[in-house]
Length: 123
Ligand SMILES: [Zn+2]
Image (cartoon, rainbow, N blue to C red; front, side, top):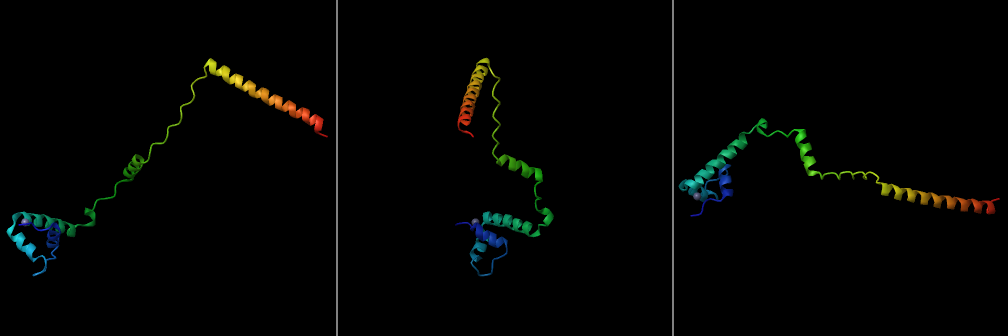
């Protein structure tokens, strides 16, 4: 014999069984089956607790710091800043000096060429 469907037990616990209705067979089964009687007893307790619950019985909203921690945990970690370049080694210093001198020389040559062109073409 199959036990009563949980949905029917819920209907019985809610008191929705009408005499001669579709739950009549479920009621007959519950009368004869200890397992279903226990299930119905548990569901009836849940229904009673739900119907008698007061607003103070409801769980309170978690404090703000809980939401902040959840938000932090769900937010990806920011990319850490790149570490600063290491100290200048003598080799790096010479290379940078050479590059800077080359750039200055190129700038000076371009300025001299512009000055010659200006002397020649400018009024
Ligand atoms: Zn049963």
